Image (cartoon, rainbow, N blue to C red; front, side, top):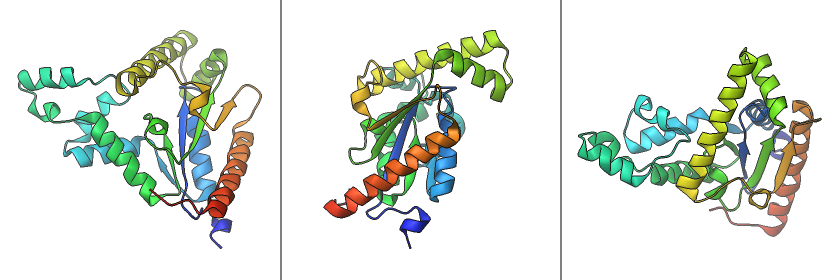
Length: 212
């Protein structure tokens, strides 16, 4: 049965917003594996690149950084016509909506929760020191480097939200479920999210919500 395979009819999409070092990527990948769903992290950048007809090499440096139309016009004026034609938000939205139509997918980051209305929106965060220790343990960083990397990431993510979506920060009201990775293990987080998925799928079936 589809329910036994983790499928949801009608199809569901989970968006996961996170801070670097919170463990969200590991959790999202494990959840996708256990549900048998597709996972979209860096893959989303490739989808954007394909849609915009530009190479991944051009797109990747602009992942979750400020890209204003003024900057693009300036680049075009300087002869950077390839980037001048690249309207990041439009292509981002098109890629995210395409994934939603496929359904049974998990999208990590990229402000997807501000683009999709019927998805299950999840926020995963952790105390700063916990995030630092995760970077040391899993990325092999020294303490000072981990602190600097996380502060830089937090700053860039803030700029990304403000520039593309006009959001100063990720508010609790933007999400259906928030996990604070202080005492929870990754496996416990996956277990909680699977329960949330099951509940949402049952509600969707009962209400017979149309897919968008």
